[in-house]
Structure formats: C-alpha cells, structure tokens
Length: 259
Image (cartoon, rainbow, N blue to C red; front, side, top):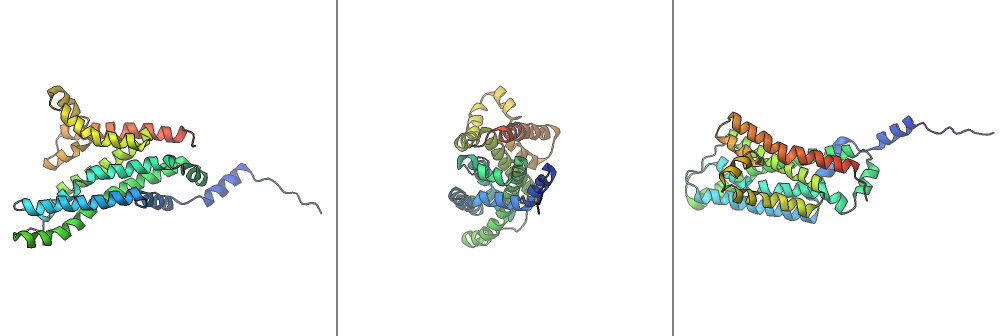
C-alpha cells in the first residue's frame, strides 16, 4: 500500500511554530533574569546596594529633621545612574555575545523580544524604586540609634512618585540609547558623560535655556509643583532621550542582519 504524505501548508507550519514559541510572560522573565544573572549585572547590583546605603545613611547622619521618606529618596539617587547601565547591557549583550542568533532562532518575531525587554526594563525600574523603601527601613532605626535623634516615619508620596518616574525614565533612556548605538561602551559613555557636559554648557545662558528642554531628569522639578512649562520640558526630554533613540534602535534591530 502506498501512503501519500501531504506537505503541511504554510498556515499549519506557522501555527505549529507559534504553539511552540515561548509565551510573553516567559520571555519577560528570561529578559528580566538577563539583567541580573551575569557577572556585570551582579557587580552593578552590589554597587547599587552599597551606594544606596551610603546615600541613605548620609541622609540619616547629616540631615536635620530627616524623615523615612527623605532617606528613601536619597537612597534612590545612585539608581538614576546605575540602572541605565543595566538597560544598556541588556540592549547590547545579545549581539555582543552572539546569542542573538539563538534567541531569534527560537523566537523569529524580533518584536516579541523587544517588547519583553521593554517590560523587563520597566519592571527593573519599579523594583529598584521599591527597594529604596527596604533600604530606608534598615537605615532608619540604625541611624536613629547612632545619632540619637528622632527620625519620623513619614513619606512624601508625591516626591516619591516623582523619584519612581525618574528612575523608570532613566532606565528607559539607557535601553533606548543602547538599542540605537548597539555598542555598550558608546552608550554608557553617552549616558555618563552627558550630565557633566550639560552642566558645563549650562554656564552659557542661551545653552542653559536649550538644555532645559533636553533634560530627561526634568521630571524631578515636578516634585515642587506642576506647571505647563515643566510638563512640556519633561515631554521634550522623553522625546529626545527615549522616543527618538528608541525608534532608531527598534528599526535597527528589526532590519539589521544578525551575525
């Protein structure tokens, strides 16, 4: 007896591939793990914990009438610099370590990987912002014991929300710049050198006026009240440091040949 085997249609093959592809939550967890589960990620995390402790401890020791919320906010300051580096390494490591071939072989739809990375970056920012409370919870009783002064367990939630937004936006900017450049040292140099360069240029009045509209950290000004100008400056900062490089990076990632 002769058995005729009919080839699968393109639709059935596509459906089979989709059924075997990792789910969105699984991809999110994988990308989130990539942020930490590397030697550089572990080193950055350890440095972040140490610096958060130094900044938070300094607030408890040297600021008069300090509160729990003040310590939490000061503990979050180093994260504004370190988290963009985490995101840059996530955006560039796959091609640098040549694991992108395996990743895109398992998940041919590159957009799914990018969405998972974006979700992981936002999650990291939110976790880091929440960790400032844990750090403050450790520092507050120790600081009160060492200094002998009363530390009020109160939180300015609007200021804390602004800090959280700043941390998330800074992390997103690192990811966008990492995607746009594709080279970790270049992206890290841009992220770390720009604040110093902007500070130097701000001594010129006209340059300072322009730089105010290109500052991703302009969100910090919202802690003192929201005005139309400040909201517009935050929007242009997001456009300059997240949207534009993000669009360039996504186009580059979707179209560039993987080697």
